[in-house]
Image (tube, rainbow, N blue to C red; front, side, top):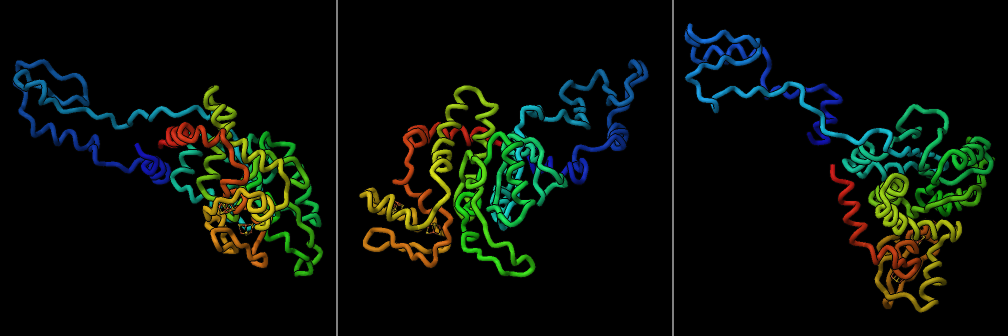
Length: 328
Ligand code: SF4
Ligand code: SF4
C-alpha cells in the first residue's frame, strides 16, 4: 500500500470496496453449479461450495478483507525532532514541508515530530534528539531568551535552520521603535547565545538539505557503523560552518574566496542568492552590498569555501544511502 493510500485510509477509513463484500458472496455462489446430493455438506460458512467435478483452478479465491499491514519500523527506532520557532518567518518550516511525500516518509519511518507550535499542540519544549531552530533571538524578549536556553538543555543536536538562526539574516537590520513592541530592538543569531552543532544556512534553505540533515541525524544516532561514518562525513562541513562563527555577508566571497585566489568563476554564489545581490562580472562575483540580507547562502554554496573531500569522496555512497532510506 502506497503512502497516499495509507494516508487516505487513515483519514477516511478503508474505502477500497473493489475486492467485494461479504454480502456479495452468496450471490456469487448462486451462480455456481449446485452440488449433487451425494456430496459432503460444506461446513465452513464462508467457503465457496466446491463440487468434485470443479477443477481446482476454478476455486473462488478468498481474499482476506483485512490485509496484513506492511512491516514497519518500530516507533522506538525513530529519533525525536522538534521545530523551535524563534524570531523567524516560518519560511524554513515551509521549506521542510516542501519535501511533500518525502516528509511523510521521514515521519513514518525515522522521526517523530515532538514539538512544533505551528503543527502540533505541545506547549513546552520536551527532551528531543534534534532541535531545528528557526529564527534569531530577540534579546528584549525574556521568553525567547528562556526558550533558546531550554532548547540547548533538552536537545542532543541543535541545528540552526536558516539564515536568521545561523547569521541573523534580515533581523540584523532591526532597530526597534515599531509598534506594538518598540523596545524589541536587538536580535542575535542563536550561536551567540548557545552552542550550535549544525548550520543549515540560506533564506530559505532547500527542502532537500533540511531533509538530508534530518536523515543524517537519524543515521548518526541509530544507524550501523557504515551509516554513521557516511552521516558524519555529510554533517562535518555543516558542523565546521557552525564552529566558524555567526557573521555572514556577501563580502565573505571577496575576502575568503576571491582575494585568496580560490574563485573559479563557477557562478554558484550568484545562483544561490535569493535576493539577486550577486552578478557575475568578468567571470567573478560582484556583490551589491545594499541588497545583501546576510543569509550566508553564497559562501555556503561556494565550492571553494568549505570544500570537503570527505563529502566529495563519498558523494556516490551518500547519494545512494539517501535514495535507499527515502524509498517510501
Ligand atoms: S550576497 Fe546574497 S546569498 Fe550572499 S549573504 Fe548576501 S543575500 Fe545571502
Ligand atoms: S561560488 Fe565561489 S568559486 Fe563560484 S563564482 Fe562564486 S565565489 Fe567564485
